[in-house]
Image (cartoon, rainbow, N blue to C red):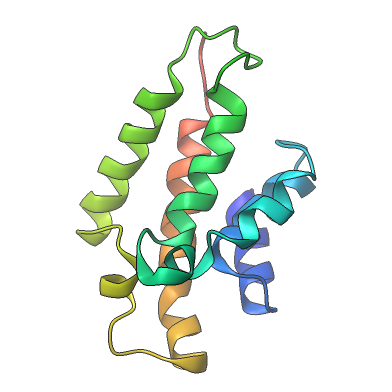
Amino acid sequence: MIKDRAIQYFMSGYSCSECIVQACIDEGICDECLLPCATTFSGGMSSGCSCGSVTGSQMILGYLFGRANKFGNKISAREKAAEFVEEFKKRNKVTCCRILSAGFSGSERKNHCVKFVSDACEILEEMMKVKV
């Protein structure tokens, strides 16, 4: 399960996007070369835009279902991406880091944002159960 591992990484200093990618690396879901890429997606891409939990998950979906993927392009990465965002919004109303974390800073923000890491992992884990 990536959720428990991602939360552990998140609470020990990894960013929201990095913890999801690192947990997926640990589980053999993706290649370790994705971790440095995930760094720039944290904190809403350092601008407060899209939540890093969302963007980290999108990186994994792209890795699994994107062009020349292991499923032979039988599953659309764009459809998976849209499905992920829709489910995340059902749970949290928005995907914007600035809105999700409004009013929180420091360790209080970290404790608040663990919910978004958890939600993203649950959604991602469900989406990775693929029948082709």
